[in-house]
Length: 478
Image (tube, rainbow, N blue to C red; front, side, top):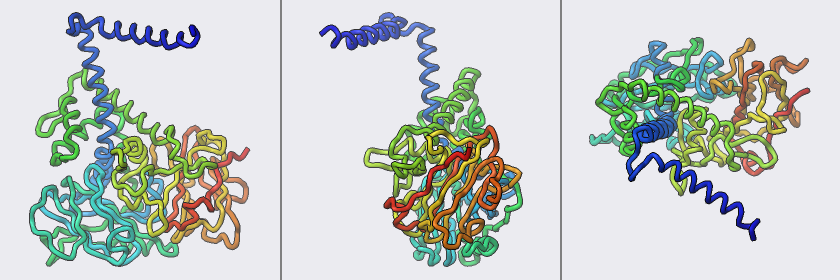
């Protein structure tokens, strides 16, 4: 009996001692000055870490807006289009499909996005990366073409007929479009993006078009990396909060910001104490999000029980990580720490016109992959892709395509891997040097830098879901 109850009694004694120590500075129920300051600092720190993680999507998308403006591409005037490569620093951008992505400001009225018939995948997100609408193949026009209308916050004007309509909670809106390169024809895909028309609804009779500007050859940074672990994160967040209307869904989180000195219509001027807390919280919040991204303890992340590959999106079919129990905050952190934009179509796990994403960053033993080692990935053929498939390698620190002397980061079925013939499988390689004779099936990595892979399938077929097809694990080549 003594053995049975010894541990609980010890635990209760330790807990009582801890409570006594914690309450000792509160004589008669009131805190002593040093205890009050300690509690105040801790409360502000906890608020700041919570706020950092919640508002990260907002600051992250501002990185895209900022990257455009650095190239002289201004809101409502132009949108960049590009075939992405390592020179374009952006969270998990890929080289599979040319992009068009830029800012429209609907403060002065609705905007029209006119997508012609064709192989387009598109969406609009608000300044918080909240989903507004889908366009193209995954959207209501199903690739047949259509006019999409983005309405400003609180819009009460007449909505004309003949449009697919989305309501934005913010004035700044991210329009993101992709053009699928049929038969690997990248030029034709970029030319197709140039046929998309974006203009204010008020000019519909004679459209005042937003220009499409090709930035393929220009270096670009569309991430929040330069801000994410310092006081600039909070400065950017204050500027956004001041410029945008309050989102009614976020009122409690605006309250948290207010307690930290970030409030619409008021200057942001943290004293030395608050600045130190905010900078510390930014580092901690960033680190916590990266743990969710790359070292989550969740078991539902595994795509197959006998593989190390993981689902990137943990909440299927959702627009904002909604579950029956509420918002899955870790799934939200995991996504936005390494990726951008949301849409229900992005998280589908059914065959069709959408796409699938799997994350690979551990080898067959469960160890994180190392940029100084060489790995082999066996891919059974044919891959169950109605359109095409690819494997892209990203730098773990920047969450962007690896930058090496090779100047490429992807192996793609439309390009490097198009001539597989009747092969039953293909081996892909990742490491500092190409194995002899495998140069065409190899992506260079950087010693002392971690990396991760995204395996993408476009137009996934049933074997991608039922377990009858699956890639091998990353195997270290000794």
